[in-house]
Image (cartoon, rainbow, N blue to C red):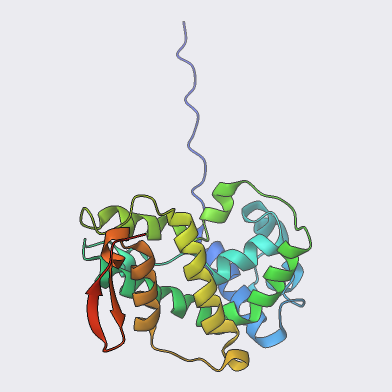
Length: 213
C-alpha cells in the first residue's frame, strides 16, 4: 500500500497586510472622516486589495473598530495585585485609547451604527476590541476582601466606560477635565465591600462609624 500524500501546510498569513490596512484606516478616519472610510478607500490608500481586506474583516465597521479600539496592550495593564495601582494604569491606558485622533474620529459613527441596529455579531468579536476582559483580570488579581463579591464586574465596567466616554468625547460640552485619579477613586468606592462604607463624615468633619445599610 502506498503511503498517503501529506498535505502541504498552507501559506502563512501575511501580517503586513493587516498592519497596512489598519494603518490606512486610522489615517483615513483622521483625514477624511468616518463616512469616507470605506473598504474601497482603505484598499486604495493601503495598496491592499479589497478582497484581502474582506477576508480579514467582514465589514468596514469591523475594520474600523479593530483599527481604533484594538484592546489595550497586555503589558500596559497586566495585573500586579495592587488594586489601586492596577486600576490607575488601566484607566490611563483606556483614556489614551479613546483619546487617540482616529478613535475620536470614529466614535460617533460607531455609536450611531450600533444604535440604529447594526448587524449583530457574536460576542467574541466584540471582545477582540474590548478592554472588559482585562478589567476583570485586574479584579480577579486583587487581594482577598478588597472587592465586594456582590458587585457585578460588568456593571462597574459599564460605569467606567461611561466616565471614559464623557472624559474623552464630551469634555467640550461638560467642561470637566478632572484628574484620572478622581475616576480611580470613584471605581474603588464602587468596588469596596459594603462594610468599608461604614465610616462617614458629619457636621464637624470628624469620621463617625455607622453600620452599613
